[in-house]
Image 1 (cartoon, rainbow, N blue to C red):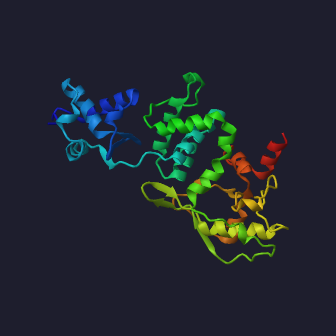
Image 2: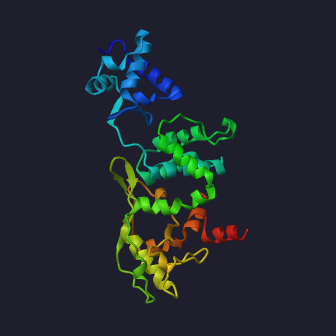
Image 3: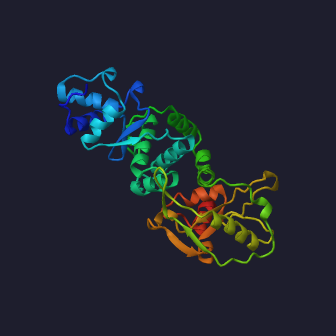
Length: 317
């Protein structure tokens, strides 16, 4: 039942209409996405609109199937059809809103570097991150001239909820970045019971991290071993056997029963080549510094990240 008059140019016209007008809630995709220039579109709805440009009549959703029929037709026109990923989780939405906040604080930032940083963290494409940040912009009630990026409408209610929570107290929300980042990267148990005042010898190991790891999307590989050895190493250097923030001196309270001081890469992983980097543990430890969540957030307010001295100067000011 799909009109054979529909050609590639009609589908592109439909995509342009969706960009400006959005997708009705009842026409959201359930199983598949049409992927074009890094953005996702509902295949069946796109084809319905394309019929309007080809024949003058928009196709009703009831006259053709959205599975093999629509997907096959679009694929024959050269479009990429992929199985639909789950909607963005609460934490993924947080990173999108955080990135929007970063752009709002400094309109001169290199946007592509920020998109890449978030994409490597959450395992989605940089284009999809860019689009999601534009979705965040649609929830910002300010006039367009006051926003750091153009907006694109979004039907995911959760993104709006995260935006409202974040913007209600931006300072508090920013301080959650490092904690959420580490929770997203690692499934960790508490390491507070491994503290020791005895110097720990650095084993002769080679640390591998930063290689691209294809799961549903490209994501940077991080070394769990480096995290473990780093915490032991910095505790062994502390007179009280604590993991202590190098910028402000904070240590996690004993009654907390979890470690909140994090290990910050002085040389960001996202700056490494796609193949990652292999480095001896001793050299890898030299590129780490323990920071509390607040100081870690301050470090990432700059690109490249702020040094410990710069964080301390910022706190003094």
